Amino acid sequence: MSELYKRIEDLCKENHINITTMCKDSGASRASLTDLKMGRKQSLSSDTLNKIAKYFSVSVDYLLGNVSDPFFQLNNDAILKDINSYPETEKAPTDSGERKDVLDEVDIAFYGEYKELTEEDRATIRDMVSVMRKRRASEK
Image 1 (cartoon, rainbow, N blue to C red):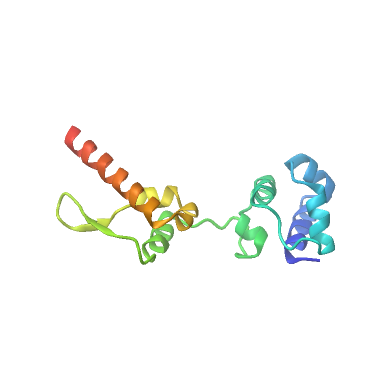
Image 2: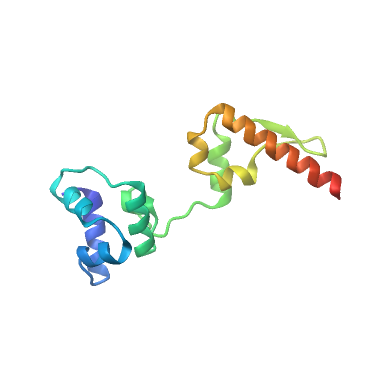
């Protein structure tokens, strides 16, 4: 039995429900959970993980065993620090001339997906953000 299945099973026990009820209520596939339990699957789809996490009000990272706190959430500063560690993250001058992270809020909004974007897509987003900020500054 996988650790993922064990964690889901433990959540069910803590909430006094069985796996079948949880699947029915959350919309998760019971067959997928059975396959996970029997070792025919090593993981679940992101859609199924999201449904189960939402059902129990825990993070997907908790279900996957990446964190021990079921309510773990990265704060915006931690997300931005992680994003800024990407080698391709650029710095842009602000109106005051200092260097500032180009994407800051946008990185946070796209966190997760951002790592999967191509550099060309990231450049396009940076350009769009720059144009929007310039337009906002000129309207003031």
